[in-house]
Image (cartoon, rainbow, N blue to C red; front, top):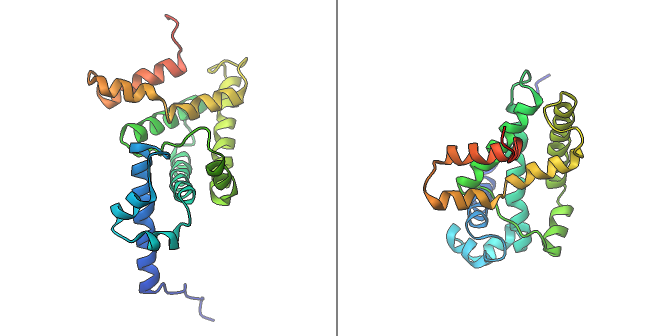
Length: 205
């Protein structure tokens, strides 16, 4: 009995997927450069080179565009976490994740979303792929935080959730941009500085 062959994707479907990928990449860039509030659907369509009506066939709203960009980031985060060596200590994995998110931001690849926007939040929470990805990433990081606390590397008196949110905040830390604008440090040096303040604090050692 022959194994079932995967369904062949039509040329039209390939073109639609390529267009959708281009839209999401453009949205990701614009969200990183301008933020959600300043980005418009018109400039997304213009940047991709399609009519706004065609754009709406893929994504019915500005919120759906932002959600698609966040799903893409979440997939990249999941892939990065899975790529970390199994023998690496939990605290070192957490540092690696923080470095990765900061590098994305400095490279202009981290979408910037408002902290308060009910329609966007509703769209994100309704997106199963995003919420499932967020839960997987949070559970993985939370487990590493608790292991690092048990090993005495991270302060065990801190709630693990507070540590998790602190790490998430590094992905949109304005200190990174301020230091880059100062033009006195390379991106790698900036990341080292922020990593140090995040994990070692400001106390003299």
